[in-house]
Image: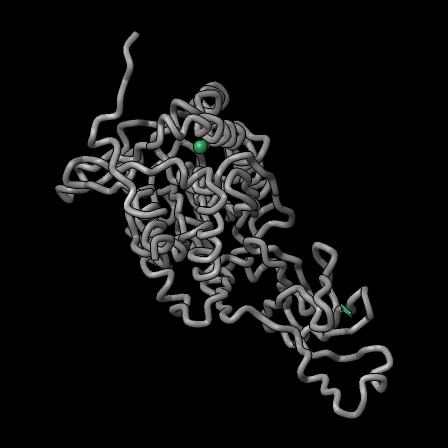
Length: 433
Ligand code: FES
Ligand code: FE
């Protein structure tokens, strides 16, 4: 029987608890990740402190609160929040915890109200955050000062092109600086029409795998054809279209752990790339969208907006898939081996009903939790997680595709892995401190 032993190059000596988890030796053609980083609860605890307490995190899209008083209960990586458009129309993000003894103030997923009353002792807060009423206030004595008990917000809250983020680190850089080069790709999404809106409803699902596996998967062009064969077979059968491997793709590290892949897929893009799947009756409307884009942005930028599909990672856990539909997706760990995914569809405001229906159908067919791709992705991630039970004997995952091109500065393709390497390098920088 042949025993395959790791070569010395495969097995670097750990320098400390975390320092060796990303084995980044680009000059030697090595990039591998220690699978302990994907199974170990102590790593997850370190991530909470080093990543999720420090980075800007996506809360929601401003269009989800169209009317004054609209609110949503949101959980952002373990912290319950209230996302609320106050009575004056300002967006607010509050900690969803009563200032009295901490109970959840908002206990329903959504609603509209000028104020919310805590179910425990009935302290009541206005949408602008003040403690506006409480039972038997006199019982607290003359020194009681309501203004000490306003709702609290995360230390930093900001909006970029409709995307609302918060950050629990008061010393963090501002949001535009944090987003850096990722802004350009958010702009390509936000510019698709004068007004974009999140479609009513969302998908929530979970998987028994580490959150970083799904981050990797969301940027992984290498798995498309082998893993999603059913979908591409269906597309060929139903629409006569196929993913053309001759078309150029791109992968780019955007700094700060952010990354993007760009492809030109076979599916329609409701923004302005018509295919028969969008219906003859919608062709004129989609062509008009394209003309409008050209007027607003000129030929080159409008071509990028209309023709190219992109998957963007905003470090650490926001993915925007701008493909046959636009999916805003958050990837939230609940433990080292469990992940919750929430996703929303972003669309052109005011598009015809039939275009909207086809957009949603196309999106759900590929990326819905019961679609022809997402269950494949879940299965792949969960399969890796099961495979990691051999992590003691087989400790490394390889992420070296395209490393030679990276070294020589050649353009990288979506099937390369610079996008995952840039995520892991930033992860290492933060978790190692
Ligand atoms: Fe909210 Fe007491 S905990 S009123
Ligand atoms: Fe996939």
